[in-house]
Length: 424
Picture 1 (cartoon, rainbow, N blue to C red):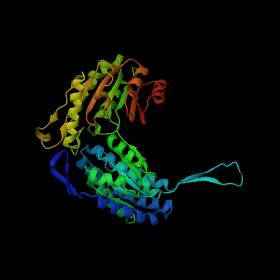
Picture 2: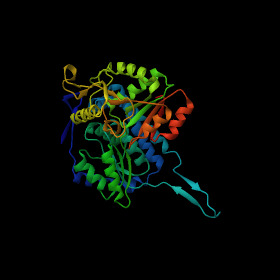
Picture 3: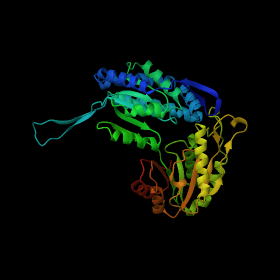
């Protein structure tokens, strides 16, 4: 077994989880294979009714889930509550999908010939999920899979096993038959690796780091029939154009960079801003960042909670050191917080820096920090803003702050991103 402690107070044990093994994976996959034979025979509507039962249980336990999320992963209670509500909304959405068409007719050149697309389940699906949204993200993966008639082996992140266990209790209470959703716990090499490599696993759904996601893609590519969907990290940016509402831009960049302590795959780690307004923006932004309250997320006055574990502090310090080494001007020199209310947690304060212009081929502007670490990059106009944004190997998310419809349309069409925001 292994213990999970509160990252805001390492003296508090949230719970104990089994350290699963390759044999546990084999047993879970075997249970999922067995259950698949009967689960796939239910109608979409019947499967959706069980998911609707589950949604009602999430609604009943929203506050309990919110507190558990905050205690186990550290983010402030308003974010823990948002995580639980997003889980509820996902369950409601997937339950509703059970009543919609799941295929369509295709016109044929021969009038007597029927051609159509029918969606069928693949089989056993491995769902591997991260710690930063421990109630919402698992449901993005598990619920669509089971609605379609697949069965699941669910491995939550080793940092948030108790949140995963809570979901499993609710799956059971909702009436999912034994073997439809199976839970394994633990770490990548002893559990995750045999799960993604298992010959009876037909699909792998993964949200997490770039390195692990690329590995899963390679494993799936070596298997003739295995499907993989991976959602990984990003070196994301908020683009602030010269006509931006400065107050809106400042707030958007504070929220984008420092909510969940920068530990989101869509966190803002680069602020790409027009030179004409950069001086005013930077002065006001730095002033606001220095006011951020860091502490235990159960305190409603706290804006930013702890980092998830000690290793995350080490990574944050490494990225900060690289920024200094590469010539950045440090504006807010983040510190490890160890006194008073911060004595027993993984607390750090924000780190903000700037360059006089864009500096190519730097570690700090190209690699994901996954922590409260953000760069301000002055640029000259719309086209350079997009060029700088695109100079990354993984541009998952982007926001643009502008009052001009034509400008955000240009960014929409020329920036390479997966998820885009305007004035958010």
